[in-house]
Amino acid sequence: MMNQNDAPQLASLTAPSARPPTSLAITSAATARRHVQEMLREHGSTRSGDADQEAVIDLLLVVSELVTNAIRHGDGLAGFEAAFTDGGVRLAVRDNSDVVPAHAYGTGEIPKTHQANGYGWPLIIRLSRTVAIEPCPEGGKTIHVFVPLT
Image (cartoon, rainbow, N blue to C red; front, side, top):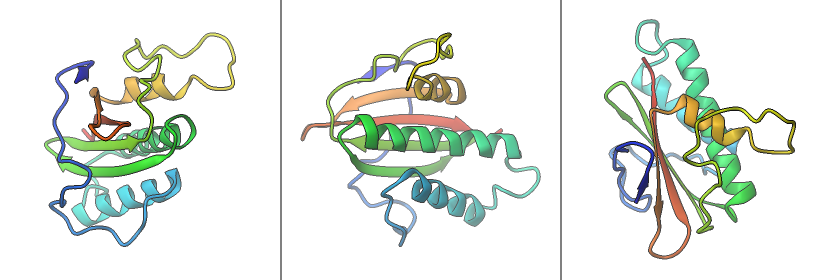
């Protein structure tokens, strides 16, 4: 496994989750954001004192970027998981491509020149505490991140 830091391990995307499966199929960044927002509501993390609004916005931005990258650059979204842990949320996004993004373990610096793409990974790196990319035995990869909520 390739790590930026010591990334937390998540259960396989095909393994049963600790919480019941969502009735919402995760097929886009919008449905992934709605799923995470519902998790936050169920967990009570949107109440004052649990997670500040800025941290929730950062989490939703990371969700959007990871899912969008899987769809656009990873030959399609193959799996999505979000789980609460001490102080934040662990995300696992699986796609169908073996290619590791060029800036996956970069500094998080925003590109100085305008490009059609290239802003997503710097945002993911800046807003996540850990990033790990794990090749899947059946092909593709899973990107694991931990986004703090405090």
